[in-house]
Image (cartoon, rainbow, N blue to C red; front, side, top):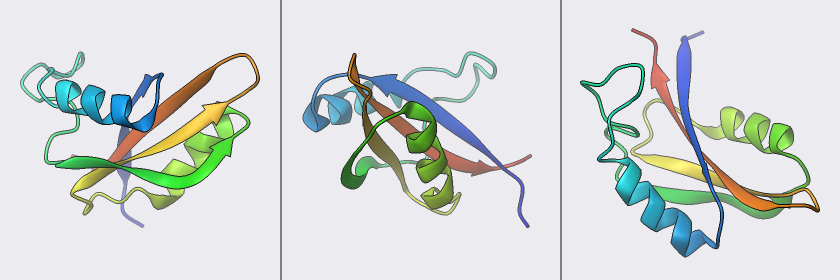
Length: 96
């Protein structure tokens, strides 16, 4: 089984706002590796599904199941836990 790590970010708003945030994030350096940008090699963000998750943990698990290092896009899942509505955005990368 291939080892992976994930890059994740969070924002609020509708999916159009998520797409605008994603474009901005792609130009920002990683905190832990400043020579690389966030979501490198990902051209766009796509909705994981039209489903809204009740909690962030369930959304994270669903994203981890579907993200692949070979994808040229990131995936976003909407979370509405009753007190806040946000999106988790994730991409998978090979370790190393």
